[in-house]
Length: 456
Ligand code: BES
Ligand code: MN
Ligand code: MN
Image 1 (cartoon, rainbow, N blue to C red):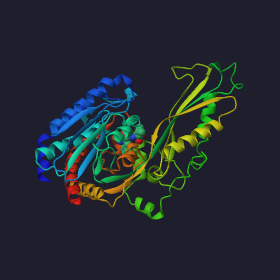
Image 2 (image 1 turned 30 degrees about the vertical axis):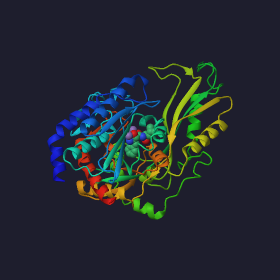
Image 3 (image 1 turned 180 degrees about the horizontal axis):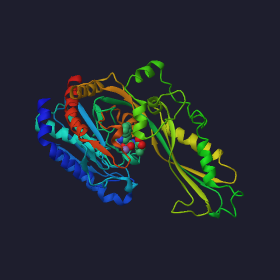
Image 4 (image 1 turned 90 degrees about the horizontal axis):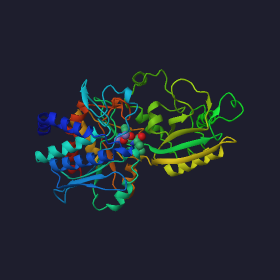
C-alpha cells in the first residue's frame, strides 16, 4: 500500500495533465464530424498504453469507430484481467449551461469539470495509470489486456462482432470495468446490476403540411396533441407501463433481497434536494432505489413538433416526434420489448394519423454474482483503500455490451466504478472529484493483487 501511495503522490500532477490531454479531444461518437477526433483519442490511448509498459498496443478498425487493444503478458500461469472502457463521450448541448467550456478541463472545488471527466475518460484513465504504476514498481500480479471502444454512448453497434472475431485474443479470466458509480466517497459500493435498454423513435404524421391553427384548429387531428396523449397513456395512474406483455419476463425480487437492498444508506430528503424537486414519483409499491435498481421504466428522452423558435407562430404541425427509452431488468429481452412497443404503438395510432416507429439501440441487463473470486477481490481492494467494506448495489444505468461479453466471450464482468451520482454525467458541468480519480488509481492495483491470490 505504501509503494502505491508513494507512486501516486509523486506522479499526481502528471497523471492529471495526461488525463486533460485526453479530455481535450472532443470524441463525441454520435456526431460524424468528429471522426478525426475519434481517431486522435484512440491513438493517444494506444501511445499511453505503450508508454505505461504494454508489450503491444494498436488501434483496430471496425465498421464504426476504432477499438484500442493492448496487452502485457507476464506469465501464462497467472490469471488475465481484461480492462474495458470507452473513449467516446456524449454530446455537450446545451452549451450555455456549462460554467466552463466542456473540452477545456479545469479543476474547481477539488473536481475536474469537463465532458468525459468521469464518463468514461476519467475512470478509464485510472486503469492506464494503475497499469503504469504496477509496471514501474514491479508489482504487476496478473496478465493484462485492454479493450477500449469508441461507441459505447451510441450503443456499441460493432463491439459484439469485434468480440466474435477476436475471441482468442480477448481470452481472460475477468473483465474489469470502471464506468459506474459508488454511493459516496465515504460509502463505497460495487455495482452488481445494470439495467437493459430499448430505445426507439416515433414519428406521427397528421395533415400533409403545417396548417394555420385558426383555420383548421379543432377540426383536424393535431399530431403533437395526439402523440402527447399516446405517450401519457403508456403509463397508468400507478406508473405501471401499459404495453401488453411488458412485464411478462420481469423477475420479482424476493422480499429478503429487497430487505437487504434497503439497508444501503439512502436519504430521500438529500436526493430530492440535490435535484431541486419536492416529490419523487415512480411505480407504486417500490422505493426510489428499487424503482431504478430492480424495476423497469419508460421515459421520453426528447420530444419535438411544430414551432419552437422565438415568440409565437400559430401553426398546427404536420408531424410530431419523440425519442422514448425503456430501462429493462435483467430477464427482459430488449428485442422482444422493441417488438411489443412497436406493435402497441401501431395498433393504437389515432385514426387519421400515420405512425412510424424505429428502434435505435438497446441491449440486455446484467447481474454480477457476489460469491465469486473477482467480486471478493474487488471488495477486498476497496475495503483496504477506502477503509470500509463496499456495499453491493444494483444500478439503474446500462452498459449493454456487458451481457454480450458474457454471451460471446464467456467472461463475467466486475463493475468497480468510482463515479458519484453528483458527477452529472451526460449533463452540463460533468465533473469528477480528484479524490475519486486518485483513490481509484490506488485501488486498482489492489484488485490485481487480491485477484491473483484468489485464483491461485
Ligand atoms: N457509464 C454509463 C452507464 C452507467 C453510469 C451505469 C452510471 C451505471 C452508473 C454509460 O456510459 C452510459 O451512459 N450508458 C448508456 C447506455 C448506452 C446504450 C447509450 C445509458 O445508460 O444511457
Ligand atoms: Mn460510460
Ligand atoms: Mn455514458
